[in-house]
Length: 278
Image (cartoon, rainbow, N blue to C red; front, top):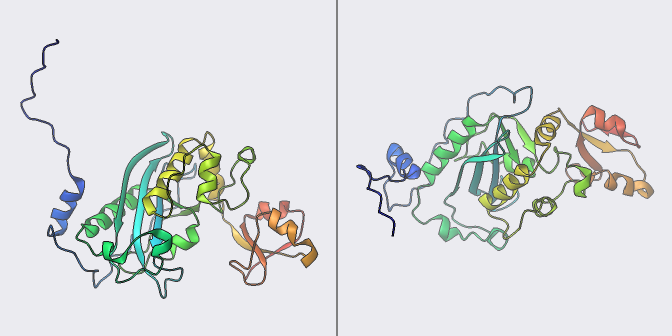
């Protein structure tokens, strides 16, 4: 039997980040904090992502009680700080926001009563904002949906460049993905096991593991940050399949039209005419 090594003079203990944040915010353990009356200060203006592409990404996702911020509420935020060059996760956080009801429970599996249980969600929000400050850009799947909830209390507006992994990134053709792929299809295309869905941090983990497997990630991100506009396809009803094959979506976001966000170069390369949506 080998000799037991001597114990260090001061035993190592893991630091509880959430506890430290809670102390700083004055949170009381065991109490269910109400939603704040005032929204946290908006994030300060941030410069665009570096010219060579972002060095760090904040992968984020939200779960909500509905599709419309006018009648719904964000009840969960998940986020992962990701280092692009190292293909590495640096930090992650998720937290629930108290809600009186959740009509979307059948979809996201979050009971309103669970959101009201005692938990340091204010400290979670503080941690999330610290991760936002550390990121060069924000990445979300269907970013147009997620970003609309920021700027509505208790979530502040986020002054960072956004990248949509569904619409802005042109995934390599050898992955055999259709335009605007789902998170599930994207994960499976990169060999990432899918074990659950519709919780914020779970979807962030899928995206982080996809990015870890991207050999050309820097090029994909740089191309995704090229300015894009919303274009409408100018095709007859009989030719609508051409728009669908090119990744245009019917009736969303432009009612009664096939539309897609494109760069000027992408629009010019299409084999059919398009026009900018005013």
